[in-house]
Length: 347
Image 1 (cartoon, rainbow, N blue to C red):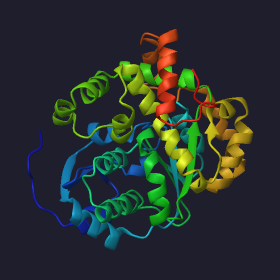
Image 2: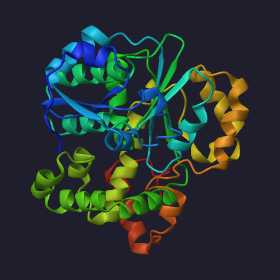
Image 3: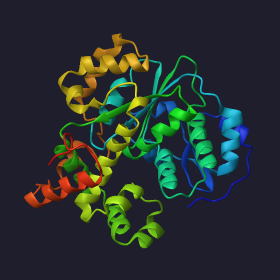
């Protein structure tokens, strides 16, 4: 429960205080939380999911009408001063690991999984926003998260998987932003890991079940729906097929926008089997010194999601899934409906 304290000037609140961080957005408001430290202190190594820290560490909450937020951000926080890299991915493909690897040296600042971009995608998917307002919000998100960066800094914005549809829009609005996509070639193992992730997260599992089977109730309880347009198109039946939609949809957007990416997809398998070569290409694109690669490789020695609900210990407690012949048949049929390449997605 939050109690109203006072009204404040946006300029004083947001432009000059790095501890105020954008928390989330709706079609009506932008919400900010006051943290005890600047967002640069909440890098991916100590905050693999920044949205959790924005809730647990919040000292105060501020709200601004969404159109006022866009006007303020575009006029008072723009332009972006340094280099920004936008990491998108399929779930359970090692994106947290590679983001921790690039969190090296003094120049790099990583922000992992701000949910504002996910909310924007879901609102766009449900046709809630006009194109002009959507574009204004998208610009404003970058200006706000990057408001404290300096010209010599490199900001890595590591996204939840649902943000992949934004890449084409970002390229048109902010073509200077660099894009990298993370994928896992062993799609069966990645799909099962995604399924276990959802199984271990009761709220997400309930939201997916209700949105699939009782969409009006699901929207009333949980708000926007993940991958709504793809779900409406292929009509998944049951949790496994819904998981396939969540896992596979980002890849379809990667294929659609692959000419905007600085590299072919970075795969988990290459990252683990030949980390130096894989990181060399990534560091080149990001502008990070290759002298820091030996430090980056040490991230392989630890659990990138330790201390979270997705840690190895937590995931090991979730019952594993064995795909049946019928499961495989249904998944392969779903791959065709989603128009995914069967050479990549085959079960």
